[in-house]
Image (tube, rainbow, N blue to C red; front, side):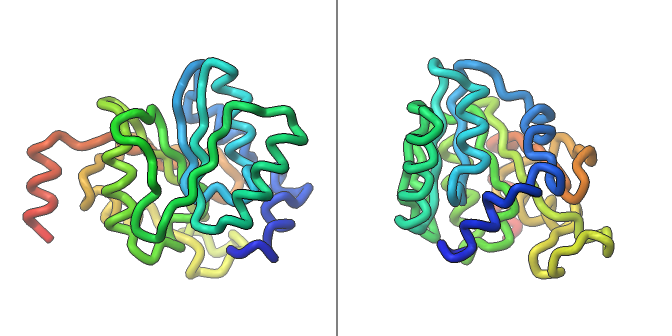
Length: 199
């Protein structure tokens, strides 16, 4: 989504349609955590995460569009939020620091990646031991979800693609109105090597 779509990311009905606060409740953010959002857009999710991790925590908000990051910085300044660091990523690399992140979240963006394997590899490298990847995707299994099929994923599709890059799906939460919450941990070194060998 480009900058012309920024208003859609900040639409007043978003909380009712997606229950972003409920999603953040479900994934267990705590004060002091270092977290990241890949595909942060205007910061709708990143700024809410920043409040939850508090002044002793940090949010890396990465996007490939400098104009989106400018909007995010403006939104953070208006809200008085100072613990968000914007990062200009690329289509193949989120540009996150290595082994420093407790949790990375992808909100309706994974299906937009042009190089998903490389992005997942970069995300995996950024996670601390025990770090988690959280993926929110519109439920493709549910035809009533009013989103184009190309912008939805089934749990099976997401699991197959993400686990191939050294992750393990550990939890599926179906408490949101329209999206899956999929929580992954880093697979052991042996499992990651086996997945790579199978490609």
